[in-house]
Length: 296
Image (cartoon, rainbow, N blue to C red; front, side):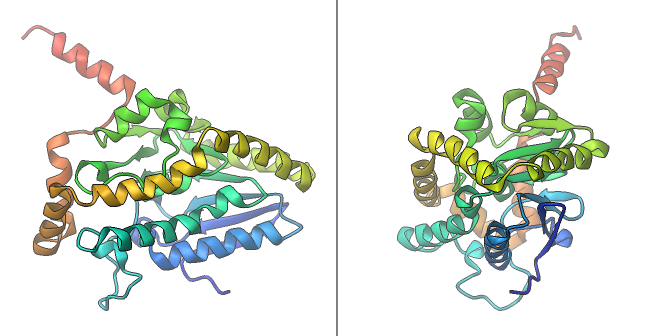
């Protein structure tokens, strides 16, 4: 299979898979997700590959799903442009199809390291947070703004990684968090300065490349099976259905109408502008509280 939306290469015991739509901040189109699935399984079959590094080209990991494909013609794969208008069962079908593509990360035998920089929003988090280890740049922006008017995440690792309080804090507001703060709350494994991101990720891959693939597989599976016993696998299926249910909220229809009438940029402005900075950083919140306590 030839790839048009991702880059794929193998060296020194690692497969590099790069989301390659930088002009659209690596928005996740149906074609990109299908290619990603194929690349993940290619890496899993390759005896020379011990782990996968998943990253994004340009200035973002991924800013989310491509809800308005660039091509003029619409097809059944252009689901994102009409999710608020279709019957719930059809909506669930599309969401589960996308879920099957990304769940290769969970099901494959070899570990996947997400290298997160820039924007990791909405669908970008659905992809990154299902990876085995997430390393982020300190200035990465991580969050799910669509919960404000478009639905809920059709993938859910938030509670398992950050705990219920922070999961609610982020998913009940759509606020984002920096890579540094995401590491502080356990949403990602580690955050490092942007210029040290490659060094950190490559160091992890170097160590995995020295370990027998069978042992990597056994230990990845042991952790994932423990998560499955806590309901993580079932939660992914339920998340898709809950997102489809959320698509019937009145604000979702309004977002869709504004998108079609005024354009996506205007609809996003309507969705997000009233939230101001929209950051859930503990330091940011502390600074704001201190400013509010200042006299005058």
